Image (tube, helix red, strand yellow):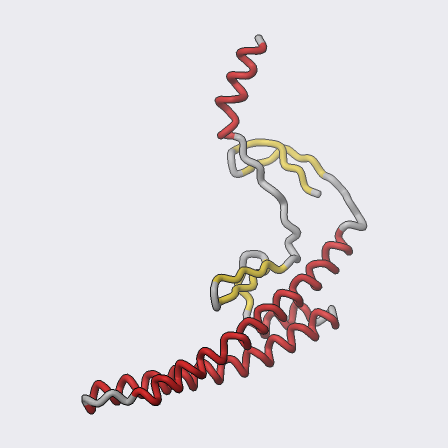
Length: 162
């Protein structure tokens, strides 16, 4: 009987999936390379929408405003550098003369932008962590666990909400 139970567990182990429950009010921050994404309830948020959500927490709002200011400065440097690189490449294609000064200057300006972009992501990450920390502290006050029979991702099963 024990062998049958062990074999059953081994065979069914890959089929068992655990689905965690997230707090619907938390903001997720995902960063990949130079880009970042903030989501709330699986919806992407712009910086202005994020400000509307975070406005109740002054510490988090301070870091968010710093991130928005750095983002504006970063945008100016990226567009300026991109224009100079594009102008240099376009000039070299049409005039058959390599105008490398604009290309080097554009890449230099974009290289100067990397630490500013890093500061944007760090301030944004701090802001979201502070906001999520206050949300989690408020939500842990009332731990009500409900166990219902309902439809899950695998069919009919027990649904635990806490």
